[in-house]
Image (cartoon, rainbow, N blue to C red; front, side, top):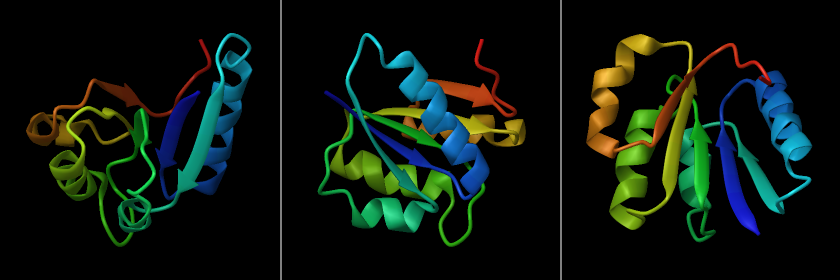
Length: 108
């Protein structure tokens, strides 16, 4: 079982992303949790995630600030940013993400 957190304040996008992952899940078993801001995700850090798919700009706590706290707790979780804000890419080096995907996200 692969535990995935999706953290993005856009409900339509999080639903679509979850659907894309589930379409891919024929070969793998996923458990997906959805959070709408970095603050709420941090409250749930007792849950061990293998992958966190996170937006950068969100209400209450942005994805960069949340990732800095997450990295103090878990150095191994795979952080992947999904955002339309490429201007933040250099700031992401501090949290060592494994990837950056640009919105809008296409299935292919």
